[in-house]
Each structure stands twice: as C-alpha cells, then as structure tokens.
Image (tube, rainbow, N blue to C red):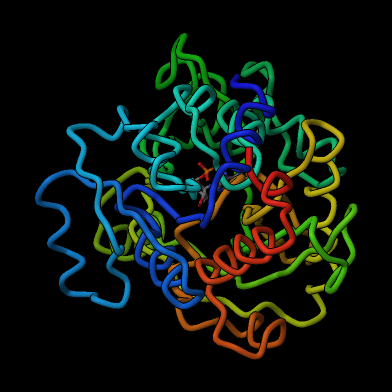
Length: 347
Ligand code: AMP
C-alpha cells in the first residue's frame, strides 16, 4: 500500500481541493453536494455516459475526465487538478486492489476499504466492535438451519444462495469457497453514518464524533417480491441482487443502539487500522425480539444515501440545512482544508 506520508505530501500541495469520483453509484449526490458547498467537482467518465448528467444539471460535475476503462485512472491528471477521490461502491469494485497503491488522496482511510474487501477481515472488524452477528458456519457439515452462502467478489448480493442442510450445500456449492451465515429473519436496516475526527460536536466516538444521517432498506430481486412468485405457484430460489433503495425511520427506542453500533465500528476501526474518517454503513437485521444482528460493513458512502439528496428525517436534526451525505462530505473537506487538516481525513 502506498505510504500515508506520500499522500500527505500530495494533499499538502493542493491550493484548493476538488472532489472527484467515477460517474456511477452515488455520483449525482456527491457532485450536487460539492456544488452546494462551492467545491469544484470532477467526473471520471466513460465516453457517452456523460449524457445522463444533462438531465440533472445541478448534479453535473464541473469537469469530466474521460477514460477508456474505470480500472485505469489518470492519477497525475487528477493530482494536477487537486482532486480528492470520494470512493463509492462502484469505484471500489472497478479499481479492486489497484486502489491500494493509487497515488491520489482518497477521502477516508484506504485501509478500511481493504478490510471491507475480505469478508473474513470484515468479520474480524465486526467482532472487534463487539456486535451481535448471525452465526457463521466455518464447517458446512454443521449446517443445522437455513443459511445464506456468500461467494467472494459477489456484486451487490448477486449469486448468493440459501440452503437448508449440508447435503443441499454439497449439491449446490460443492468445493467453491464461500462464507456461510445463518439466514436471519427480521427487518433489514442499513444506517448511514459519518465519522469526523475534526470535532466533538455530536455523538461522542473515539477522538471525534459520529453522525447518523439516514437509514435505508434495499429492495433486492427477487427476495423482496418473492411472495408473488410463490403465490403464483412458481418455485424460484431467492435472489439478493440490489435493484433500489427505500427510506426507513427506525423506532426511536432503537436509536441509542444504532448510535452505539456506529460508535463501536468507528472505535474498532481506530484500533485495527487507524480509523475511518467519513461515511460508512452497517448492514443489520432486527429480529422480532428487537435484537440487532450485524452482517456487513461498507467502509464508504453507500447507494442507500441517494434517497436523501435533500436530507433525511435524521439529518434534519443534525444540521439546519438539507444535508445529504454528499453535502456532508463536501463540508468536511472544506472544514479540513480551512483548518489545514486534510491529512486527517484522507489516505
Ligand atoms: P451483503 O452482500 O452481505 O450486503 O448481502 C446482500 C443481501 O443479502 C443483504 O442486503 C440481505 O438482504 C441478504 N443477507 C445478507 N446476509 C444475510 C443474513 N445473514 N441473513 C439474511 N439475509 C442476509
């Protein structure tokens, strides 16, 4: 991985930071937030894809850099334009391990993205945070209930399968490498957090503070419509491909626990790899006994935040302005630049 000192050197040479990201995932929100906070935005784009932004002029980046492939980005051109990369799900997926050595400042801590990439490491992080998780079956012969089988590199839940026994596992999974988790029933909730090391205003966490900006639930095909198929007599397996997101407001009595979950994840990140400044999300399922189970961490902005371009039922209480995650990111970059602390929020 590129040395942090090298990234600090680059960012300290920036006169006025710009925000850059790949034109996908949550880019409308990121560019819109940058514009609201007066920061120049740069869209890294495949030729032809820029036309979408004509439909959304307030979320169109100020400049485009056109590339032939998202896995091959022009680092020196980005640095020449004083770019700070905001990594989102597609960015992380397209770049893969190349992100580790990419010589451009990235908002947050690129170690966290490395921990997110490996499901085993991610679970170490969740355990370190002391969170309740679904049971993980290290030995598939011990499967004694419905389990969800997650293959490495699955994109947005695509390709996962649910099996009920070791025999079914052998038949459908065979020797393929996978993580096997207890299949949890309950209500899924995906809270969107922002951790800042730059101030103590807000919910105390580590050396800074934590904000809960919103909560979404994903709509996955075909798990979320499977009742129709089953009722019609079709026997289709459940699928978990993310298609869209919908907003959620949690029972207020759950908020203390959800703030604690965010705090624990941020503090465990501190201990394990030096922290997680910026946005992150924790994927949870709430049982009918009101127990919260965590099964995944996304160490960057998630697409569920796209629902709240104009703020959420939570962000309305954190900041008077309509506050999207994109805008919160831009505010952080402005604050850090003003205080000459950009090195504390990028790697
Ligand atoms: P993930 O790749 O871990 O984000 O999972 C994709 C989707 O699969 C989630 O959004 C859930 O709908 C579902 N899922 C993942 N893990 C579990 C689990 N342990 N129990 C039930 N559903 C799960």
